[in-house]
Image (cartoon, rainbow, N blue to C red):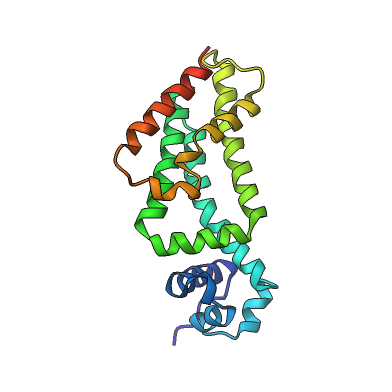
Length: 194
């Protein structure tokens, strides 16, 4: 007889994501998550003290998937300008996929991100730190000119928000969006060049 896998925070988060996919943010409960795992809701609360903590953790997990993908680009060997273009294109593509591949889950996570401002702020901080690393590398190699790489990275993030901020998700599948992205990307890179 096989023994059940131990209950870990990761297993709870996987089950929570599936419950959210089925029921949506408004109807999903900790009891639903516990039922999906075959445990009591008290067992789930041993790992996550509150429903809000569980929802924050599953939101962080969802956002971190993008951060991890982008971090590989940051540590890659491309020249800084190519790396910046690649990173911004990968961010846009990741957001397009999240919104387009599973619109119901994207809508659910949009609700969760509104509930978890601190998680979102940390995610944005991580993304702008990654951009800062790229911009600083460009400055160090003489490809970019800026007296304040962190401020410039934040400006790049803000200037491209139409292509990654979920409030613009309805625009991401419209005709011409790729051309609009390319134009903003070219303008942004020209502004950083030495």
